[in-house]
Length: 357
Ligand SMILES: [Zn+2]
Image (cartoon, rainbow, N blue to C red):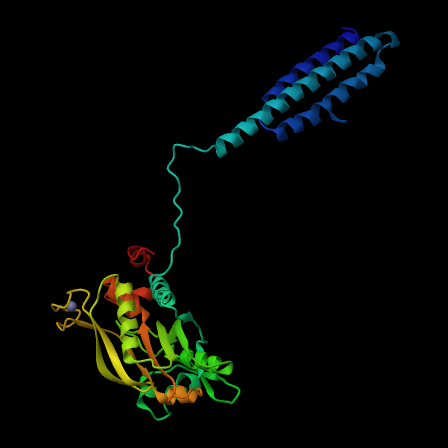
């Protein structure tokens, strides 16, 4: 076999082997490796071309054409495989990302308002509709606003009964101890002080918020919510108090509920009254929840004590007012028949769901 024939044969063999190998490449990396081994600077084709130099000059153009044809064939084979691999990769990606529209959707749980907060908003809204302005006060209070100004002097037993959380490392500008407010009544003092700075009563306020007492059982929690309601004006009487209570309680329980005022004692009101509603469970005939009395105690109320009005500089001869504070959790429990106050704060979603939260 002459030189040119041998070279031709080598080139044909190389072409066949390369085209087969390219076609069988499993992935782009393998294909690239094959390209280098056949077409690279130190590849198989370069090796074969070394023989061209040994051919007689007249044979060289002939073999040159053959070499170009082999190069073209290899380039085509490489191109075809490369495209095939690319389209396979795209198909795999599409398959992986395919959305099956017949599958059931993934449900996303929606959040909702906590039953206590919902109750707080409902109650505040009723008073707001009656013309009371909403006010808020700090949860960290001093003794003046939480006790002294509310006619609860230092030695008063009510002060001890409040089981106050004192803040050890905080004091006000006078160096007096600070505490977590035990009721929303300090907002009464703050609102009246603000009112007296730039005017005179009338003043009608609803003050919702958190309060704190060191207490924990089925009906007590160290943190709970109150709504404080009060009105100061000329000629405010017990009749106004009873009218507001009657309207509020019927609106909140969404039915006519009978109410009664029982004489009681609070330091910040005089006279004072506990307010009962006709039992919403047995409608007054007597049951376990109302201890067969037919009545449920819901809040404390009264006419604002003259000492409280005096503590903020309001003339008790000219003005009078009523005030009451209600426990939000207590009313929500009664409205929805919830037996244990602690359920509100244990974050058991089964309870919250049943409450429609
Ligand atoms: Zn009852």
